[in-house]
Image (cartoon, rainbow, N blue to C red; front, side, top):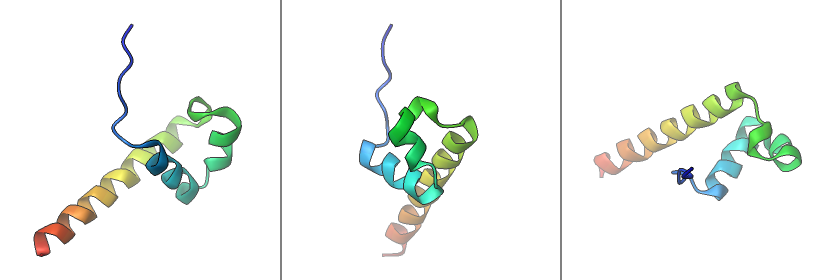
Length: 60
């Protein structure tokens, strides 16, 4: 069984978890302890940030 390599750094995931309000759960239970809805919101927010960065880079 191969493990998939994560795309987001651990630090970035922690930043998002803090911003979205479930970092305490991550600290207590690990990433497996978060709700699917929280994981989805984390991915959605990461995409928003990436899109903002791309837009800012294209304006330069």
